[in-house]
Image 1 (cartoon, rainbow, N blue to C red):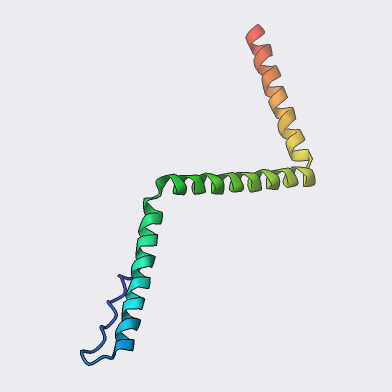
Image 2 (tube, helix red, strand yellow):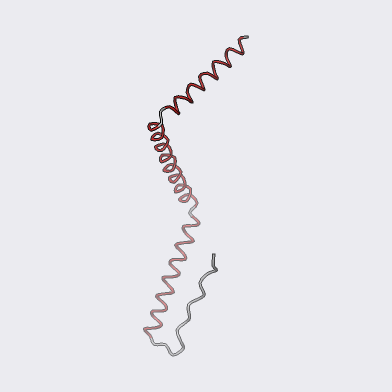
Length: 97
């Protein structure tokens, strides 16, 4: 990451009114962008809500992906279900002994 951009050069001392006004307008625009960026950084609630939305979207995407994968390979979830049932049954049988 590089450091901040160097300050733009100021208009020369013999600059005309148009150059000075253009420089003032450019400075105002840069200041407005800086204030906007700082405001966005300080908006903790907004950033947290944005992160929640991103997480929800990612979870929905992964859930859909897992559902698609289960539909393409139905033997895998069935095998996992059989293994879980067998493990529960074996645990119950061992405890009764």
